[in-house]
Length: 308
Image (tube, rainbow, N blue to C red; front, side, top):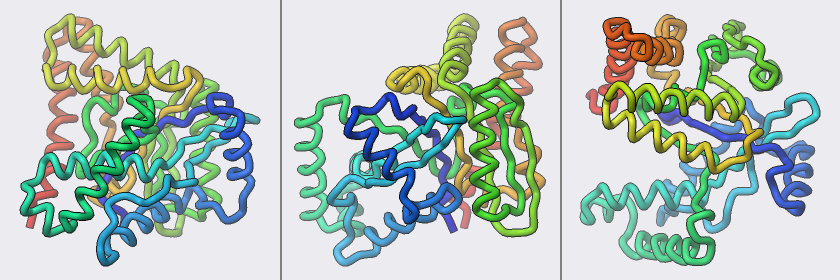
């Protein structure tokens, strides 16, 4: 079972990387033993579990992961590095900052926690703020409202009851291709094997334009301050990447908190877009109703974190 987490990813074109990195990623893409798209989340999760169940536990891997999520659109290769070490450092820093010291010791011995923090500090001093840029953002037990802003309802890809690994990969690559060419990807696939997924894929140009529009509307009409800050954060993050990148929202393990009916009914991207349009055109009742549908849906899911 995957963790109850969703992911916001940026796939940069191969041209965005340095020449040595391009060669490395091209070689990686052709490797037969690399994690494939359909099983990559399981492989990534398995590595993390193995580290944390070790004696003693290892909060962050000693070396950066050589793996990445890949997409091909026509002849272009897009790469989203896992960055497992950096993401583990960032997550552990947040964990230590939000957890009493005595409780942290129950999870990780204090000596290892301090060593992990020291390693991260040295990494930051060497690389500066640019070294802290992650291609993947993670949210547990819910999806922030701001994550729906960069997408359109027609970019939705829903897989129910799964399918063979090759079929899942082909479906997702098709979604990326349609996003680049402007085609509609609001599709549902149902087959006989196990596995379910819901994702959105769009171009960076579309993502930035939609985010900028949302910020203008929210600021002009005095929207929720918390949502404004979150959307601003996503907008700044998107600006850090190559303008020809792809942006993906992957529901990941969150789909295990929703049955097929709820997944099919989840139109959070379209509902939030309708709320913004309603706010922009003076249809305040429509805007409120659509926004409340999104908020209440994800609040009910997030409450499962504390359910017994």
